[in-house]
Image 1 (tube, one colour):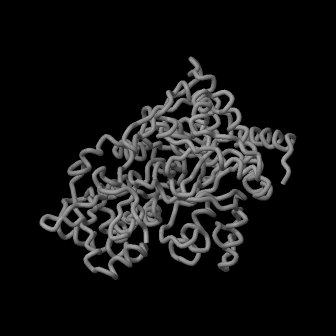
Image 2 (cartoon, helix red, strand yellow):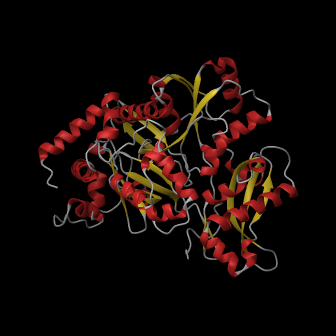
Image 3 (tube, one colour):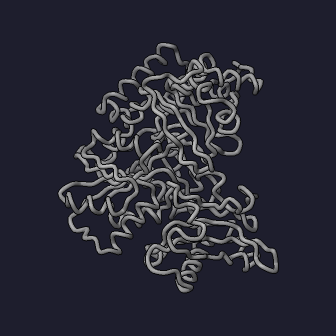
Length: 514
């Protein structure tokens, strides 16, 4: 498709209008043109962001020179763009100062916000954002919540961590137009006190990290909180969530919605919809649907929809996502790699593959709902969040599904992490899952029960693990060690706002898959 400067300018103006008018924003979700047009316009907007970064950002000019980048105008625009070197923390963020990575090589003295990443890779980073981009992110966050949860005002209890972290502060500010907001942070007692004080006359939206929301409802049940009359919905983010965990949360929440973002980039890159959730649940129960959509992979990824005019998303040869923010930024991010493994699908591709599998999307939507005509991005998670054993990669999502498979036992589970431990005498490495017990005392009986359900679930959903057990029954001996809250490996995580799923000494990163 030939994209003229007039079309590109029109797309940019339309995007700006949609970002400032909720009615127009909602209209675009179901009336966008075909993926070919939108994706091509998105590619042109990404190329413009690249050219502006190359022209005005000293660090980016030096980066391209160090990478010996030479522009090649042959081939499609997508092909040309794919030849631009990808940036990441190691080759760009750690090499150049924050000021050098800003437009003009300096941090403005006014109208700039600074937030921190959570330090999930070991070291927190500071990220600078202009007032315009902060306002844009907040407005989009507000619009998506309004679209997903409806027009009625909400009483928002913001349980994301407060302070310098990007998500907590941004979500609290963003959801002000959607109703009443109280930012408690991840404090169970404050949240339950708030619910009691204001009572069940409001419809509550509670936001937070997935494991914390589980801990919240489990702790409330343990102390006998009276849920009668309370109507609650939830937004989670910061890490993946299994459908087992969603079902656990749905015992108290009417709807549970997950958003995708990263402090390195911005929150609100993509979000779950009724359609993406319906498709993901199909993928859990019907492997043939999963194969039709993403190929031969036993894992069920998180599945989101995104606006290609706002974010241009590609994958590299290692199936890692490369994300370009198409808007002008104080510190531009061009083909930025945060090591999330996944891929993209156009709306038409998903429709076609589901249709081939005999599934109509109308069957996956609530009555009267319409599907957003947006592309999909699927995400397995960070590549460094696995342990490898007997040729099988064991993923946090698989372990979570196993620990929560039995509701009675799952209600007692808090945080968990994995490592490879060396057996005394043999020197053989075996996988060990450490589990925090939030209800009662750790016991051998509970450890055996969790070990049984975990092994069974891994054999059910992880083909590599199942094959390893078939070849050698001892491969199924996944050890489960229980700990009281804040004890054992969880003592070093007490100050962290996100869980770390793999202990630092847990052995090799990634590993060879069968």
